[in-house]
Length: 378
Image 1 (tube, helix red, strand yellow):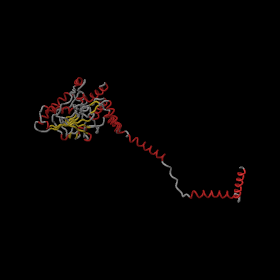
Image 2 (cartoon, rainbow, N blue to C red):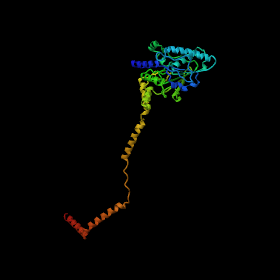
Image 3 (cartoon, rainbow, N blue to C red):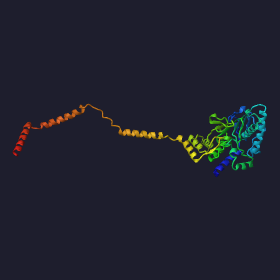
Image 4 (cartoon, rainbow, N blue to C red):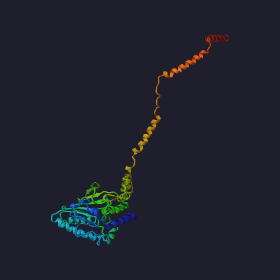
């Protein structure tokens, strides 16, 4: 990984970790957050920033998400450990009575929720089938979560100095009914590693993760924009597909939609493949070039569209130069011949009138004289 790419990823990581989990009021107040119906949620474990204040949302009692110095006085590690312990006890107390529990969470709250569910199910403290949870924008999302991506390199040595431990992914939820939701290019759950991808994740943090923009946030998600798959553990992984944040930001500034081909080329230039939660594979230059070509191809005219007009022009030209001339309209022959014959007859008559009346006798005499001369010459 070159120096410039490291710098971009570092800036993205620092920005999202210092502000991880802001929940804007509009999203929190909506009846649907992610794919969760908040009217049926027992506890909503929020992220940093203001906790949702709504009659339909109950937050985790006694806990506040904090990341010092941006939010609160405790480090992220301290806040996370405290929240996980409180939620673990809450789940055990509820489920031990045979009562099902329905949870929803966001950002740092999703780290807490995921860790608590993993603990109670892996240690078999409760029946996992009684737990239902919608875990949204989880920093520990497998493969692409921010604390998963930063678990390598220098980060495990540097970030703990400010109370942030990139602890990587969990091993699973062991049969609990969990759905994880992530928007593409939300840096908290989908931190890309290439320069262009990381830059979009950074913009995506501000535009998607805590945005007031009604198109790019987790409130009232359009099901048509989502795809889901089930992992080996039975966890549902739902991806919300959106436009590249940088291009989306450009559209917002220009107040106009960019052509589809621009978005297609932008996606083709992302250096890695794979939806949030999937293994991210770095593309080769050849693969990127092929993706860009495939993105442009639908906008180019086909061979037939280019050649057909030329072929038609050639056919028209050949026909024009080789077609027979239009025939002259036919007329009765007498209309053409009679005047000619009359003129010829008039000429002959005029000439005959100039000849002597005894022309025939003169001719005969001339012929006889000629024969006599021929005989004398013998």
